[in-house]
Structure formats: C-alpha cells, structure tokens
Length: 106
Image (cartoon, rainbow, N blue to C red; front, side):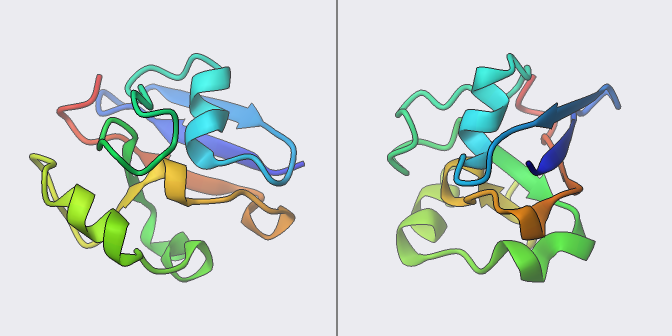
C-alpha cells in the first residue's frame, strides 16, 4: 500500500496509507486531509485538489494531460510542479510520495 505525505502550507504533515489504485485526491478526502476538497468528485472539472508535487517525484507522477493543464489555469499559485490530485493514480511505485498544498488551500 502506498504511503503519501501531504504537507499543509503551514508545515503540518499528514501521512496516509491507501490501496494502490486510489487517486491522490481520494487519499486526501478519505483521510480528512485539510486543503483538498475535491468538489467535482475527481472529474478534473475544478481545481480544489491542487497540489505541488515534490520535484523528486515529478517524473514518477507523470505529465499533466490537456484537461488538467486547462483546469490549472484557474489556480492562484500555478507552478511547474502544480498538479490536480484527482489526476494522479497511486501505485506501489509512488510509495513515499510527498506533495504540498499551496497557500490558497487550507
């Protein structure tokens, strides 16, 4: 089971363990991680699951697809490492993944 660390903007860490095949967004919402709302239910139709992927994990989480890139245009703090958590499927290869939440999500 992959373990993921979510880091709030204030530095508070939340470590969760979820089954492979769970989206990063669902890992956060199912474990009450503050700052990840997932208002659209993981349909890539909002940006309430915006996370910043630690650069060490960027290649393993994959590239943004066109829908995700378009939706990210609506976030206040768009960065190179910005991703939508609903678009990252957790696998055993992502065990240890670290993501942070931008300031606007708390």
